[in-house]
Length: 324
Image 1 (cartoon, one colour):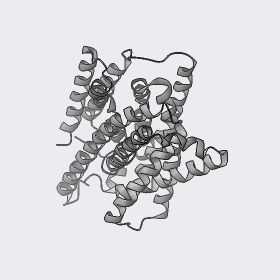
Image 2 (spheres, helix red, strand yellow; image 1 turned 90 degrees about the vertical axis):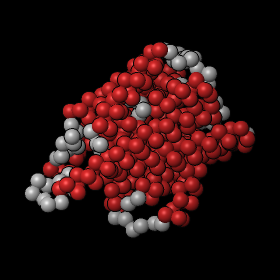
Image 3 (spheres, one colour; image 1 turned 30 degrees about the vertical axis):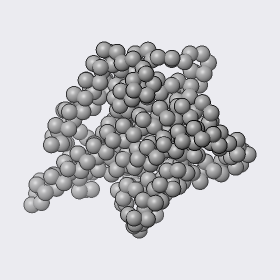
Image 4 (cartoon, one colour; image 1 turned 180 degrees about the vertical axis):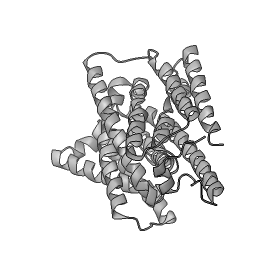
């Protein structure tokens, strides 16, 4: 089962051996991890579908414009959700961490992600993002001493192995040339920005709801992107392609699915489970993009891909067996 560190006991995530409330605490802990893991998988499904839509829109809209447009749409959706959910007072330090995570993880990170997506395509891009949970877990171990049982670690390893096996296969229409080098460089920078954003979000979301935390992140990201675009005189050129109705519909749909639904579920996962676990299960988008690619993009699904998906699903099952 879960290995509880001293830090986690201080935060109430694990029972103290001398506490009479130990049983209740461990039940709450396990239920929270189940919610967090399920939310992370939901986020992965949302991002898989959104990636296809964003890739189609990326033929006409530059990465910065895509990021700004999706941020505005997500911000409006989250603001509407907060009207019903309500705003709760939160510590200033938590708000600052969330704002910083939005700037680094969304404003910078997602722009790099769209650059990678345009250069490498959805499948190769997702392969590069497998580094995110590795970097995130290392950071969480260093910062908070987050530890998992051997079986849970084995399950996460199987997830990464299965995804890597699927994505290492040569993808259809794989792009080559100098653009690929740019894509790889952007992907590595994205990994660092995304991992930093996840760790800062993990700290900030502890004191507020996932919807409120996601709103703060998006607000900071949109503000920085808007100022950046205005300072460069690129605001109109960035958004002009959205006058095309098909492009606008793609960006709207992808933003609602990915930036609103996916981001909220990802933050919810960080609120309830370990940062490394949330990052790993959120990285299972390839499991969902395979059937979606076959359906929407008419891609062939090979036996290798099926085997990889099976290994990853077994890893997810092994992980969930530790929290049930």
